[in-house]
Image (cartoon, rainbow, N blue to C red; front, side):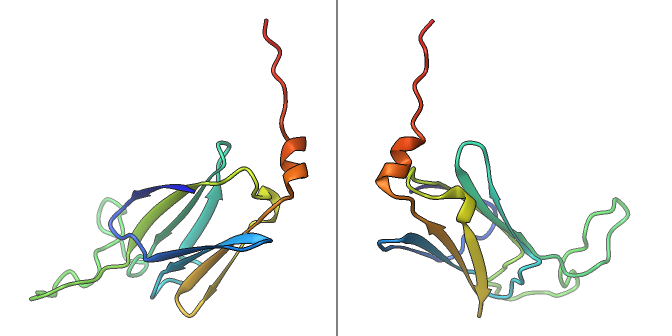
Length: 129
């Protein structure tokens, strides 16, 4: 699976393949399912993204206020406010049965496989004019 990464934070990730599916595990500590979005586009690219705002407060332009704007950090090694990670799915994934769970800060995306016969059925021929 090819992947593209964008954003401020790139979560640690495991990808496991077994007979019936692929499993993508992403470490997203501090995120809730309300913070996370999964989107599958027309080119079979699955994008996992998250954005965590500090609260309902906004500035004059309507943008969310920064977390802890008055703190003077001497050292800051983590920030989990936003990320976006994309994967081009293999042909043998059943796009209609993709599911996801969030448990203990781990987002697990299950990508069920289809049989090789089902992949072949989805092939189509294009007439040359």
